[in-house]
Length: 340
Image (cartoon, rainbow, N blue to C red; front, top):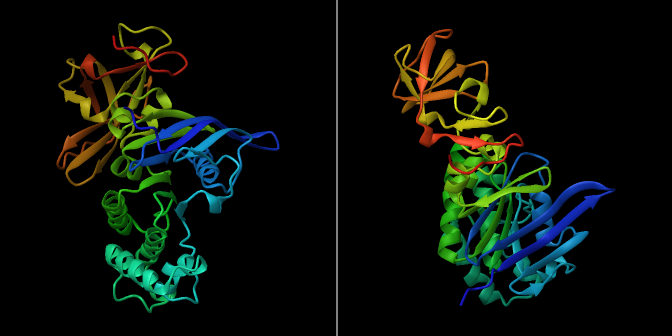
């Protein structure tokens, strides 16, 4: 027997003064999963999260959590916790007081509060920081306090709205691992909003990529990378993004088709042996590999990756080739076509 999804959004829409927020959002989220809402600014991912949280009410559609219709329910009645971009900590309260504040409001007995506090601080690596104020903590430690507060709430569903965007790159990487480990250890369901595709691809079981208030693709990270539904997904997912080649540059394709190719599937070959002749526009040494940007009249974002330090002179002409098996073909509207 199939287990019903823990969170369900059915044809959810939200508009402000007739302006689109989100439209036709349909999504099933299994219990214990990690789902990332990904997309550029203004795509509707935070609006979707706010609708799920009960901070906004939809104009259309239905929202269910654990089988209960919560479409019009208050946020306090949805049995979920939230972690925000701004840590939302009380500056005059200690770490311990911030973490158990919600439990205190709900009149949870002191002994139970202390037990939950100790476990949350232990999980987040904050034991010994109980008496410090937020102003005495680093950004990463403050975000861990926010995570500890979500843990003590004991809810099965946790919503996170760009929780790492205020941290530097090294801290983001560290806290990212903390969040994923917490989600696995506690078995909670996480819905996570981010504009950073590295966060989404490295943390989530399922990525929901959005654009202009609509879902473009739902799937495992590897599905979005290897089988993008359209050219938007192809260019948004992956670093570097997929290059797009106009059909005029290659034989055997329809006049209105666009061909996609990933940098790792391109090879530099001796002149006269390639499928395209390009001009080197830049070389960027990344440590384990070198990214070489290329220019061709009928392409966008064309580049090639070479192992190690392999710089090339700007303006140099080179030939490149690739296998048909590694090409992605999109129709005139940018939608993926069936394999050739």
